[in-house]
Image (cartoon, rainbow over all chains, first blue to last red; front, top):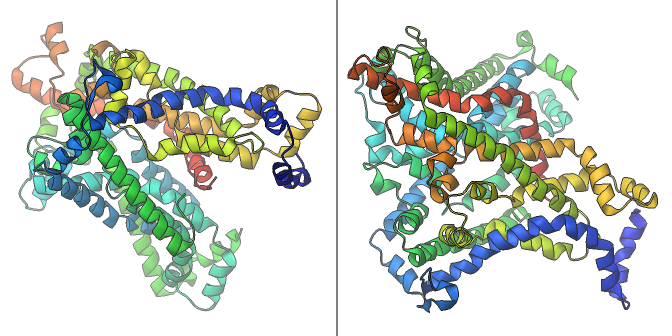
Length: 317
Length: 311
């Protein structure tokens, strides 16, 4: 398709002639065939459960299905808001997401520092090695956490003992839970999250850096006043994306790090839906909690998107 | 680019003292980060071959102490680990193939600006990125379809990642020239012909990236298997790992039942060994990833770059 014919296209949509739709459909049918398997999959397995979420407003019985079960309005939601641990779960969620927001600058600093390194080989190796943890499975990462923090054999306690401190049972200490969760996440993703910044740094024009250098700027000043502003657009976008997830803590990693001793601080909304629904079998109630969580996430995301449009004139989507 | 000027800039003797100090700090920080990233993996490896008692006493930190492969022996004797391993390989291979047959053609179709109803179809896909029915409605759907506790569920679950569709679509839009399509069409090729004979061969890089993303996802995931399956025979490795490493389920029963008297001399040694086996297990479970990683690393990074371009 030449550029000219593409530009002329809107015109054809203005003067819709008879048979316009038919012609477009005929032109597109082979693409529809290519698209169909994925579309059918999405409709069944993504939109199907969205229809199923109606059970949140019901006293759902599997034998009666959505059509036959009794509607009870917002009863399940009200029950959840009155649940004594409701606020505790919100607090647990926030204590994890806010702490992980505090570690946000780490990847930026890592990328900026890595950019200063001029020995290409060392730089390559450092990048490759720091990406490794990202590709370990959650089960392996959490196992590593448990093994590293072990009271008698874990290297971290060995170091504490070597320095004359007392060995700690970190995994049994509720106060340590959110730090363990966030720091292990940082360990896993520090290098990987820097990928975007590293590529943004590579696209800063060399002339800017040279000009600053000729003006007598030190390396630190160049990093601070040329490189950092240069990647600021990327930083703002990734930061806002993380803010958009402020109410989101997935269950998969929590469930792996959870034990009887830290239950009080490790239960979040998503793990509660799992406990109530899959283990407890209270389907409607659990679906309601899941829906509530989903709605909150979307509201936060939309707010952040609006904010982002104000700050950067670019929305997240 | 200014490689030459960078080299001059980096000449140590010409640097001011405060640049030197700064660079030293930069190197120290990077080396520390590299050490922290690699140490847990290194520690697992040395602990797995060290004398179990020394590991238990916290004597193993930087170097192995003693040398024994007993813990690996235990892992190799444990049937459930190997069954899990085989299952994981199956899910990774079959699952990824299924992912690809859904994702790539779909992404190609969505890259066609001329496709009628493209924006509407795109929206249908995009909505699922932000809104989902949630755990329980999904579970109920699978149950109605009699998929619970089947191998199929672990292939079907999450078969289309909309994020991957968008990355692939962006690649098609930016990397395959429209003149090529025009030429093929004038030659009388059908849209199917263009896709299979022209587009696919030109898209090896993106196919590699997306296949890797899916494959790593399959290999690493444990949650769907935990929720949707309960039969040991079909559960993947991550579930076995979780049982042994996280839930501390005893893993040396197989050795016990094998009645190997030299292996099980006394109960105390056994418990050290069970602990030691965990290190061996972590290593064996991560080995495939660690082995192929250096070769595919740059593809992963490329995927991030393609994905970062807003489509």
